[in-house]
Length: 340
Image 1 (cartoon, rainbow, N blue to C red):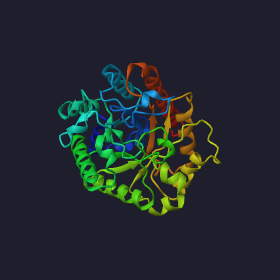
Image 2: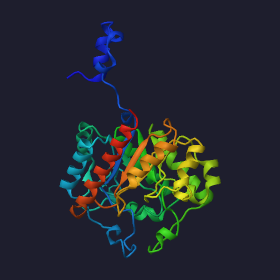
Image 3: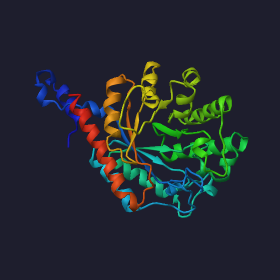
Image 4: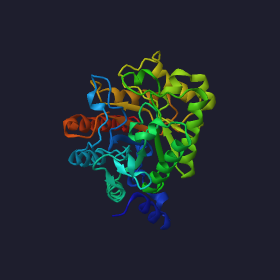
């Protein structure tokens, strides 16, 4: 089958492309240039064992928590619904060659995961790795989560980033997480760690440097610094880092700090991939995110959008995860209709 690029090459070579009516030349949709991604959890071990009582599903588990049938169905639905990227939360669900000691029971081997990445690519999705190095979400690191900012910690982080980039065959982006690093989000933990000021920035720059050494681009959720220390953030955050401000409400009043953050990032020239969700009673979150950001962020800096579910990929969450993908599709359709 001749694709669009080959078609244009053929008619151009024949010297007749200028004589073709526009209707005969396949046109690229505006949304094809954007990232339409969903975050899917292979690992869900970002939180300590003792967590908020109303979110018991967030507790650490030493065993792999994954319904492979749901995983496969979610990937297939992303493909059929027009998504073009899946961000995979790896955590300790892979038995890494460099640090097998952090793996959960029944973790996937690196060989098995490489095969899965090939399958995902064949379905038209770009797989992107995510390892969350926020001290509020790094329980997956095992004992190393209690060695933050030490030489051993840096060595382990460097090893994992290098190995993951090799597994993904030099991914375009590498999501480092970095969200919610404050005491309030760890109030139910037994062991609380919060980096501040230069300690946070030094570790952050180190992680970004490790990603860039692998010819990938760092991607984070910037809320911790952006929402709490905006002046410091704008002064110190490199433009090379892709930022995913997140807001999961449905009311996009610019007076809301989390909403205003999109505008502040745009005013300061940062590339953005805004994040919505469908983890609660918030069906309009993603569509409203797309509509607000399409209107307020320069098209060149609006790289795309990320949908999240914040539930482990297990059967009891099947309906929510699949519906969340459908909601992302609906928002993509809206975007296409407004960019004809």
